[in-house]
Length: 290
Image (cartoon, rainbow, N blue to C red; front, side, top):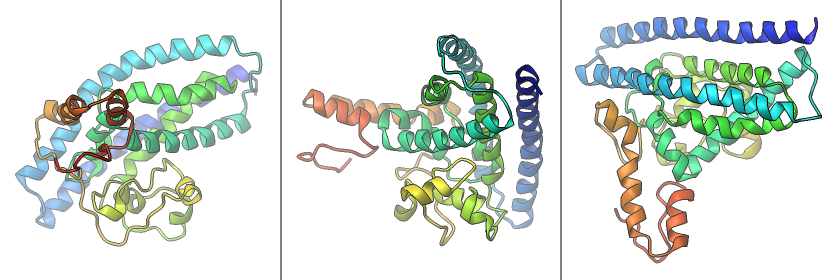
């Protein structure tokens, strides 16, 4: 198969998989809601939280459409100037998928540990309800961060279509791991990210914070020392709970908190610290009390 056919096949396959995963996700969400009714966990508050998660998709898809268009232009422009272009075939497609999954781990780690990026990602973690709808809970600024972190793959000489396809597949994988209905999966837990591993990632308990950043594979967490097994069902949400169901509050909850900290900065180093240090950082000579 020549390169153009490989690109056409990979692009079609990745987006088709994503579309079918969306169908599965909506069906599974319905099953989760029915299960809550039968187990008497269903409540108006939990339903509103689920609806709030779904509504974050409205601004997210708008910015995704705009940023994706810009990313296509940027990536292909950069790609044209690179003399060390990699071949396009099944092997490089698999390699790009592995590198995109590693990139996702690095990006995911960074957006947890750099407060400026956490402004966006905190939206995904702000719900106290953990179900498939949480997989749809995104900040409208998320696409910008993703474009920046995947640009090095273009600089390595990989065709942008392979990169976009790999990103789509890594994101599509995320939908099925956002639930409480699926328990532990035996030997698969050693290699792949699973619902059990990702429940830990969404936990606000001290031992679960900043753990299990993997996308498709959990091996990155095992290699880099960020793995934590699920020992009991986590408490979900932020360490400072965000209880609002208002989609606007959900999107911008962390912004006024950062603004207040920036006003307290007494030097440029403190100002930079509030922006680029981990969430919760305070100067050493300053009280950590809110």
